[in-house]
Image (tube, rainbow, N blue to C red; front, side, top):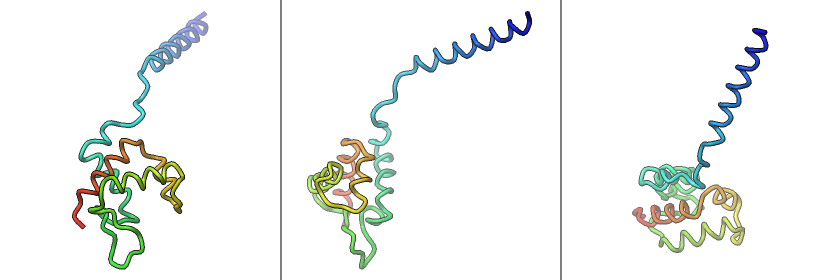
Length: 115
């Protein structure tokens, strides 16, 4: 009888935990904190390996610099990469990991960086 009571208690606790988890709201499609100033800088840091810190590649680099380019030009290029309309080696995969809002924020960030 004690064993049955323990099984019942465990089952009830598991059910209660499952209901509590099921009632949690779904996470947003993108984290709004990514769109804060510090969040956008963190996103931009992902671009530094190829495009240089703040979008300024190392001297002699064959990769495009992003700093100071027009916002609309940057956004159009990133959107075309994301949609597979612009040829790329890795950018078409990388841009798929960002929301449209994040791409717009990155374009805005890099357009404001000094060349």
